Length: 272
Image 1 (cartoon, rainbow, N blue to C red):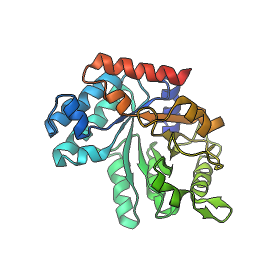
Image 2: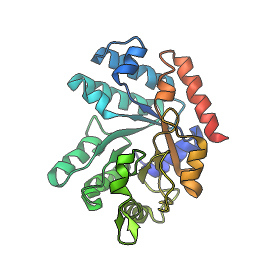
Image 3: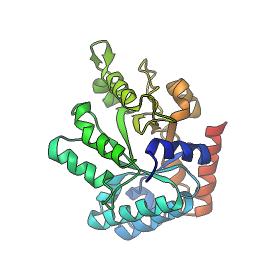
Image 4: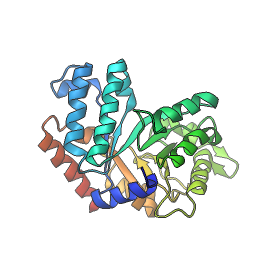
């Protein structure tokens, strides 16, 4: 990867649009597709999605938990999905939401961002609630190898507010995290490689979302987030937003053409 993640992501969004499709092969979806809840069903589901969409959208976001629940065979499917998605031209944002300290966080960084790992993605999601400084191994590894990190900042689940919206002096906890992300991305063109996760259905916030980096917006589509919500939440930061949807697309399977048509329809709505 010869160019920074922020450069590659900006190019992909400009060429293919900003849509991010979550790859969430949970048991109910496997069943709806007529597939068994096994590693075999997981692989059939996963590769159908990748082969249908990875040559036409900017980002595919596998949720690691749905692969891990199938043990080593599921992780092997995840490895194949990462490689195949990149070969088709989409970027892989691996949704692992890791966060720890010391040698453990170093190991997580090696696993998901290190160039010798078969699980290495273009970017990953991380949790900052052991302290933003504890994320440094992720950030250093990502920047060294032209990968990205998305820091969970303002999630759409109501339980998150008690932590994320708590006051830290004159700013909220989320606001302080956003400021530190913005500092890391300062002056980088076209945008930095450190992003934030901000739910598409989150309540209005006074926190500054102009972090000069990508903003992953889960909750768009089947979870209730609309284009109007994106405009309301992100305002002037909207050009850097990756709206993420999963069920709205995946429930259209298993027919590849239908998956493509639904993804295209959602992408068109974002361009309007």
